[in-house]
Length: 165
Image (cartoon, rainbow, N blue to C red; front, side):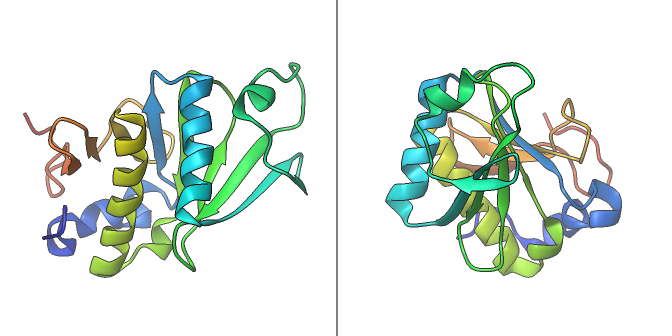
C-alpha cells in the first residue's frame, strides 16, 4: 500500500502552489548524517554527480566538504533515485541535510511513490524526520517521513492547507 495517494495529495504537487522546487530537509543533522546519505546513495546504486562551483569531481568524505572555507564554491550532489527524477543536495552546513526536488518530474501516483520511497530511504537511514515545505517556506512542512511510523505522512490537509494534528 502506498504511503500517500495521488488523489489525496495532487494539490501539494502543483508547482503553481508549492513552487516547482519545494525544499526538503532533515533538521538537526551532523557531518556523520551527511556521510550516511553519501553512503546510502552509493549503496542504492542511484546515479549521482558531485560538483563544487559547477565543476564535477569525486565525492569526498562529508567531513571534508563541510569544513570548507567561507566563500568557497557551493558544493552540490545531484542524485537520481530513478531516471528522470533529480534531487539536488546543497552542502551548506552539517546541521541540516537539505535538497530540492522538481515537482514537474513527480506527476501521478508513480511520482508520489518515487518521492515517498526516496524520503523513506533517507529517513530510515538517518532515523530522523524528512520534511518537505513549499519553495522558500521552510517553517511550514506539508508532508514528511515520520520515523515513529516508518512512512511518509501528510502534515497539512492538502485541500485547506491547515496543519493536521
